Length: 326
Length: 256
Image 1 (cartoon, each protein chain N blue to C red):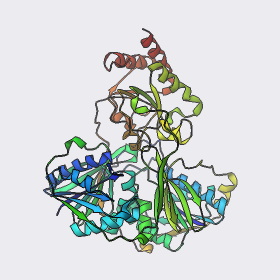
Image 2: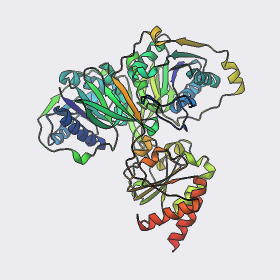
Image 3: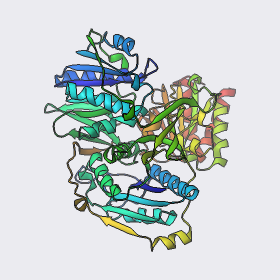
Image 4: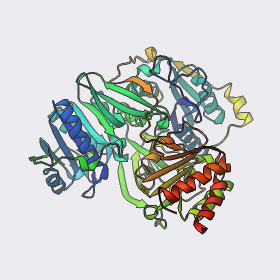
């Protein structure tokens, strides 16, 4: 019986959510009385494994194979399947990254299990873990139990645990070399790329005015543009606005866009789907303007205005101009 | 190219949700339903691929009887026929169980390509497509923003995090999970709606497909999320609300 945390790295650098997942693993392991091990998979991961060895862990597994670089779902599934068969952990934790979403459901299915994905909290009830997940785009929460024997597979949401809670210690490192063959890997990945140089760095902005579906039409965007100018803010958007081509992708905040933490984040007509919240919930002050009082954005808002943005925003522009002039 | 599109019916986007009496799901009686948004993009991508390369588009949907409305809409938009795995209590299955249902139904079709949305707007597991690929023994690619057919393979553009992308080539048959915004959705035409009435919709039950619910991740309880922050709601008319907010930003947050 043990708990295994699968860390994510790319080109020798940790994914930032790896440490959050490790923190979650250490906390849950302590509560369930399970020893905690961590694994990192790739090619040339000895350095990363050595870094992990300075954490409070039972063991560190360096899953090493040249066919694990570049990442493929086939390669990672086969490698981790072999490691899990060897270790037989009762719980396997992943960060809920795009890469994990690509292979962890497949890996879990190999063990006849369903991945409990994007978990935001753990509780122990009667010695059993209860997992909290968001549903309906964050409008509801739900408790889940894990049924049947392990291994069970869980991925945790960005920002749900804090990386600085990781406990230090010392752990032995062991290298695990899975039996992989080039013929197992069906996908041929090419080099990652960016569409264009990013001209807008939202992360540097002190104030961000961000617009969502509530703006209804492209023709209405001038309202939030004026508000951003009046407040001396950068303009950002939720995904649907960029999908529609109303604003360039580089202004998108959320899991597929930029992650921002300004002094003030003013969400205009944004309901607050999980994918958006993970990109902005680190903001110091969140203001939400939305006509729906039940919109999930209000769960993270310090100040809320329940109302029609087409009335509120023009009034705000006027008040902001007055305030900045005076 | 024969393309199977797995679609799901979910509560309409603007629904006001309430927890049901049993506390284990939402109250559905007064809700309207629609196609899961990423699945709508998957369907559109299938229709566009068919227009370019010929072939057939088959809509595949697991859901209760009410889901037939969403299936009809897919047929009206241009899917050639549909398979409805009619199951009133789909909640008894976990994602693996649902993927098993879809895989059984898909096996009889031997499609060249299976498309589905990257996640559902209700449960939000984001894994049905990947598990379906595993069960069907097919390669997959996730969060796809572009599909290009080559000889015996496809080249897809996969979205990575933080504004990065990657092209991937995979052999056919394969499974792709489609990201919202990959294309521009079409509306059903009057002609399409008329034609849909005569298109074939085959029905299966879970029992016929030989899949029993055996969830390993079990939903216990549904509830409104607790507020993590104490939100100060600014009251009054728009002008008063605006004035109050600017005052807060100026004197409490001190950014103006």
